[in-house]
Image 1 (spheres, rainbow, N blue to C red):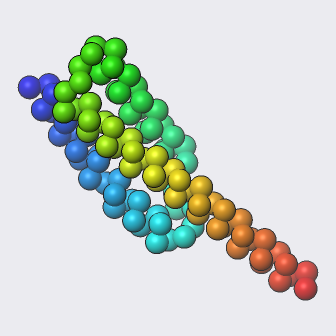
Image 2 (image 1 turned 60 degrees about the vertical axis):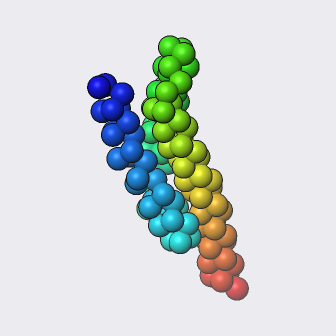
Image 3 (image 1 turned 135 degrees about the vertical axis):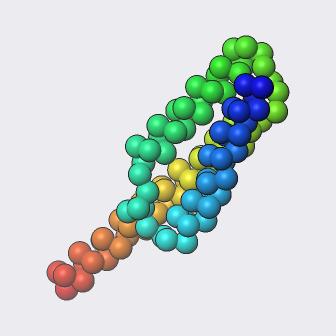
Length: 99
């Protein structure tokens, strides 16, 4: 029964990551993304995965963790992309001011 509840929690979180990924990718800015939040959640998933590995408990719940952390890593990659886009915009604004 505990695995069912754990899976439900992971699926609820997991449903939000694809939505956030698409939104963040389309936004083309990192200003609305919280890097500390993404990092903390990623660490939480790493701990959950580590617990499953330590117990040798490779049930479907383990694979839901893997799916979620994959989406989080993609979100972190979009954050990095968007940060670079933001820096490019700021650099271009600085060039316009001096010209």
